[in-house]
Length: 430
Image (cartoon, rainbow, N blue to C red; front, side, top):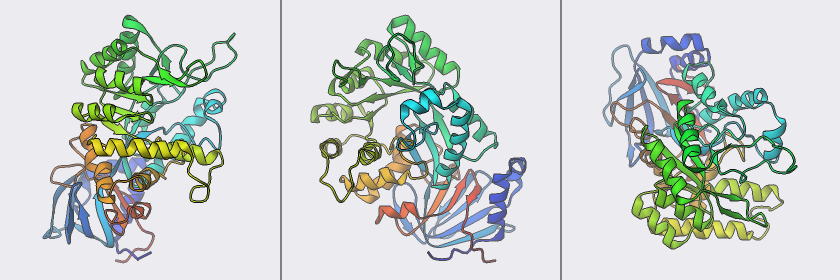
């Protein structure tokens, strides 16, 4: 790995970030000019550009950025600087299923343990260059995600900016954990049904601090355990209407054609998973500008947990089918979303989804755009996802050019969140 020259103040900024009482001094720090080999601004690559940061915002970006008087210059040779990545489907309160099954995490791990794990997951995520996550369900941990977000925002712990969805909403009887029908087992999401029940549950979740309302439009509750639609289209439309009245959007877990179709017609903003998508469904999504988070890495990880050896064994039907639906979505022009369902596999390895998106047919350049400005547009985050004047100084530098080689996103050298340097190389040259 190449050595990266950094001013000593950058390392001191890391210490300031990791020591919350010092974070209040951020407004007093000197402006910083970042000088990588190239800058990807969220849409296009620019050789020889630099970026000027003052406080928490980007002040300027371009080829001729002088270092202001009293400012600091940070040289990042051999790197590409790009906007902090935006993860579209995470579960910071889960850890990999080959460590502990989902059922046992929900039923046997205390909320205290799960939050303690989540603080580790949040830091690993940020260190991987992911500065924003849309966290889609606490999976039995109530509103712990709302508290985790608050702790990060207050500087108590390091982590990405979070968009949270609390417990999520499921139709009664559809979700797990299941078994022991004589007992009412704790569930991994909030059960609600019908006109009054869904209005009350949606409003309650919004009042408790969720940013997105997540619904399960289908789940594995068919007579033989197969996935089937849950909420009616009218019920889904009601949730969308109630959420919209407070300026919030709805995301749907949907894998079956019927579940996907009901959710799309009801007005959800994104469909996540989409394993059973068809050309007709993806065409409707494109027409209505519904984003698609395919969560490729989750299915890939679960299949490997079951014994499949990627690159050695023949590709299982589940993976082949996922390739086919991904190709359908691409050819239809659906707005693609970067969201891997991370938590099923290790936090900090968010790059898995990006690499699979390339493997399944997207160009590396298109994937990097999806992970930055694309997700910013889908999630309506106008203050990030691009490098430009006035935007949040959420920035990451990676060794190499990720628009040519997506694996460069594994080689994170430098991370800045809101103007604070939170990751820097160990080698420092004054």
